Amino acid sequence: MLKEMKYVIATIGLLAATTLQANDNQLELQNNPELWATQLGNYQGNRYSKLDQINRDTINDLRPLWQFSTGVLRGHEGGPLYVGDGRLYIHTPFPNKVFALDLEDQGRIVWTYEPDQDPRVIPVMCCDTVNRGLAYADGRLFLGLANNTLVALDSESGELLWEASNGDHTKGESNTMSPLVVHDKVVMGISGGEFGVRGHMTAYNVESGERVWRGYSNGPDSDVLLDPQKTLMMGEPIGEADLGVSTWPEGEWKRGGGAPWGWVTYDPELDLIYYGSGNPGSWNPEQRTVDGEPADNKWAITVFARDPNTGEVKWVYQKVPFDEWDYDGVNENQLIDVEIDGKQRKGLAIIDRTGFGFLLDRETGELLVAEKFAPETNWASHYDMDTGRPVVNEEFSTFRQGVNVNTTDICPTAMGAKNMQPSAYSPETGLLYAGINRICMNYEPYEAEYVAGQPYVGATLTMMPAPVQDEDNKGRMGSFIAWDPVKGEVVWETNERFAVWSGALATAGGLAFYGTLEGHVKAVNIDTGEEMWSFKTPSGIIGNINTFQHQGKQYLGVLSGVGGWAGIGLAAGLEDPEEGLGAVSAFAALEDYTELGGVLTVFALPDA
Image (cartoon, rainbow, N blue to C red; front, side, top):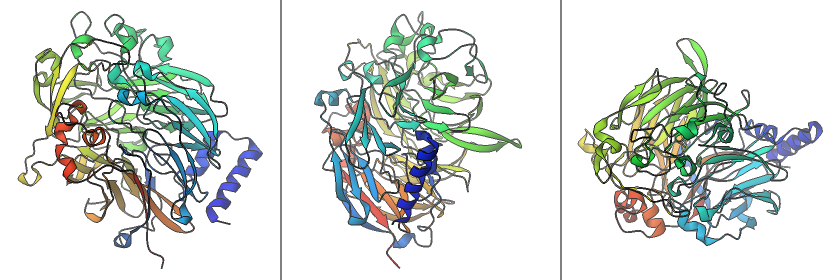
């Protein structure tokens, strides 16, 4: 019997004997370095593998073993799961197919699941029909469909076990995120900030699909599930009640966005989940003022620490009060233990859309570090470490410049200096590794009228490469960096022609992996950034590189298939430079390098 299968059967037997809950199953799987059982690699979101068969000495021998076409166009985000049963589980963008593939038989299809969805959800998906992937626990696969249905599938057969409705696409709500299983619950967010939805995170029972709790991103404290006398902000109780209402003009919080469509991480010791909420409703800041003056619009662009059992909020940190640039706050929250001033701290690190790298205390939400990783960042000069608020450069304030005024050369773009593409963390180096967008924008707010199910954007954008000092970098739009979260500085950086939109992977083999929009999978020296290996897949990569081991052999797996916000021009056939919320103009040259098509590529070293 396969070594991995023995491990899984032993784990299942332990679970049956002790009636452990689903998160204990996930913890068991995550503690086996041969498996890749959650999209971010572990609950902490580290995307780090202890496997080292593929290393600096062997990387030049790495070869593709087989490829599998998903039969679906549009952007393929997320990546394959491997839980030790000899199968890879992969998913697609809309129509959200799921495949179980035989790893030993060159991707033979074991089963396929294809849901029946209303195609009218496609126009309300802001930035392509992407999906960030499957979750797994106790023989069940969980997937959030585009139409807001959360489904549970039997991993052995693909049989639908239950489904739960998480939203209404006729109101502009959709889903792109990957759920996460914690305890006996699966937690799920929602998309649709550009349609004036009201964001929320919801927990469902893994056995039945019954809703357990829902916490909103805005509105009364009773809806947000916070207690202003107990919930912390910058390490102190919030104090004032119902800020999720009072920091908005009358009624605007009901269409206030704050959609948490990115990643969820979890600390089993503190028993807290962490995630970020998205942009506030209209991108026109004038429509979110109170008495004509800027208002915080809580709790958009906020890091939430919630109790997964009840949904109650332990602490919050709002990264961008009164957002004027669409600096969506959904990037992954990396849970890392660090030493600061000689003391061990439970840290939470973010390489953020704002162009700043943050380090917070994940017990209290106290801000520890806030420094620029993208030097072109100009919307704010720095963060006030006492208040936790950005110091905004009024030259680039779209509110101060005014409605129907085109504020130019703002850095970074609304895409962020890093979008949701997840970073990796190596405990060996203490560094974060991430794909970066080196793009700036012109931003013109306009008055938007809210109509349920229709775009509620309120701004037009154009984008361009960020300015550079070195002529060798002229025209580059992306890079891959190593970031020191404690010192708040870039350790090394490699340049790329286009924004890097794939998830990173760090390994004990001394390598970091990422993909490019042209379709290259790259391996670099984790200490220096030196490129050591590259392979071009059939389409641009916005998916995540995952690794696992089967029968003593280490594999890499990645979904290619260009799309997402960066590739929306290709994915949706758009040509107007201002379409795709400005992305079409920025990535017009992408069609010279790649085409559409979803493909899984599996790599390994040749047999000895």
